[in-house]
Image (tube, rainbow, N blue to C red):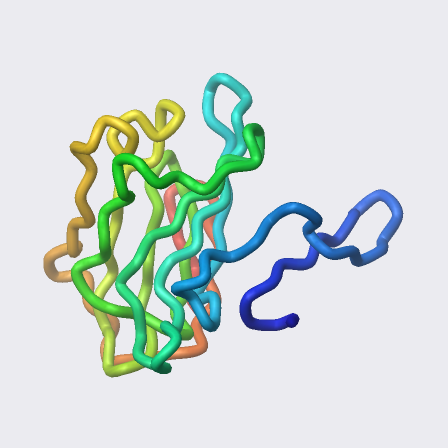
Length: 156
């Protein structure tokens, strides 16, 4: 059901919504935390699901990676977990880095993980989330939105 465990697509050419046919959210996720995407240098496209709520309602620290090109969720090696569970947070990819910002359950930190070069660090098993030292929000905030332009990330 939408919203929650299913995805919709919006076609910008036809201005219509449709089910994201063939993309099933992993069964461990009850509600998606945040969704971001990127295209690698080879042209492969990826969706990232960060955090969310598990089946018990508790916030998750999971990173789920979907390869749009192959139609498969990454399972081996398992994508790295965030340092802090997050729900209702902002996320985006900027300059080959995936950002997770703020979130529910008193989260004021910003974490990053590299996703460039067709996820080489993640598929190689060497990627890990890093908390940006000194870059905490002034207070924990949930329900955030973020966009990037140039070298800036705008958070609302």
